[in-house]
Image (cartoon, rainbow, N blue to C red):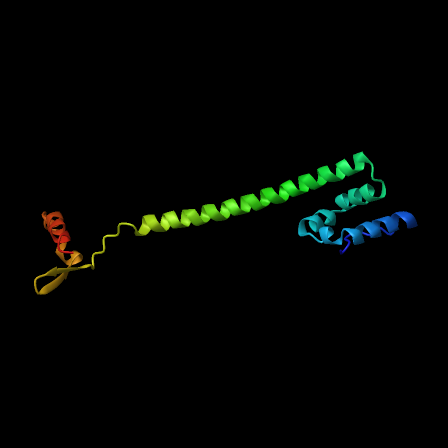
Length: 140
């Protein structure tokens, strides 16, 4: 494990107990969450205190600090996923709403031998334009 802070100031017996602990629990200490926890200087000192002086209070203090750290990580992960899913859902809703019922004016309408489009049928000056479009919808 890469140690972010030195424990070289400890007396010989304490330093050996820390080294033994790190070698014994090398796999658990290589976890990303544990590494990020121990990277904080305050947490690292709590860790050393709990190893060198394993009283119930020291261990409980270390556990509480780790719980707070882990809650922050989980909350950050949850919010990140929530934002990701929300933005993806918004995009899909927006896309569906935008393309759901398009009136394509260049859509061909078969009228016997000639091919016309809806756009050609719409004349601004005629009052029966809506009727023409509705009547042509059946031929699509």
